[in-house]
Length: 89
Image (tube, rainbow, N blue to C red):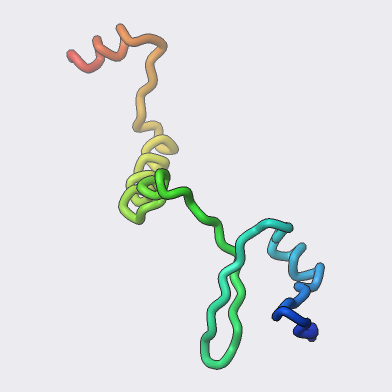
């Protein structure tokens, strides 16, 4: 697809591309240049106070816990007394 660069450096992204990438008005896009090409990628920004959760280390731990839950390695309790009793044993 060929689009025209308009005044104020504006470009319209074709509807087929927006649909394929599920991009909507207000979404953030990152522009980079690689080997003489413009690369446009949708991005999700994370509020600074939540960045710790999205760190590489935290996400690695999340994957481990998800696997443990999937394998039935995690206990759950109906009340705090049952939890304390299990911890004491």
